[in-house]
Image (cartoon, helix red, strand yellow):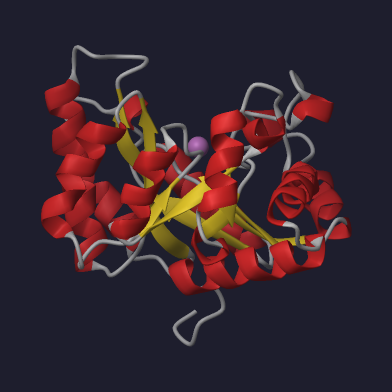
Length: 256
Ligand code: NI
């Protein structure tokens, strides 16, 4: 069994053929998928999709690219309480797209760090050119916060710091790209019990599908590359990353 820990199946690009996408994933063994919210509306839709399909879960949160001056954090808090929600996010900081609203991004990220502690749910963190800033915000909560740095895009050194903070590292399609030596060095060095696999569908399709819409069934390409780097079987990588997803997101736990 393979677990895709990060897919935006709530994106309108999946509106027409969601059932087929989920079925193709299941054929490839990707039988559990976490559907990721990016604002109030997409978090709601993630919950709806998760309620309608077995093996699908949701997160609720505000992506740094969607922060807003009159953010409805109360609405997010209500969504977090729903049964299908297994994590808070996608949240974090993004200094690639926008640098001018960093204070607001930090405020909304901090509110979600606090919600994750209050509800004992992992954070799904997005950083882009902002690992250091996000790390410094999480550091005071060391021991209380947990989660994943999704689609990790910083250095090996930073990946080690994230792991020391108690976080997991999310590996996606870019590990299959020619230029991604840094990501492959992270896969090589970071212990297997700290890695998660994810697609970030519909974005970041693996090399064989590059430029096309990504979907959870393509996750097998990511697993193949990790297996080669680690010198393990694809079955072992699937099993261990699924166990890691279970541990972090408590999928199928008693309270679900
Ligand atoms: Ni995402």
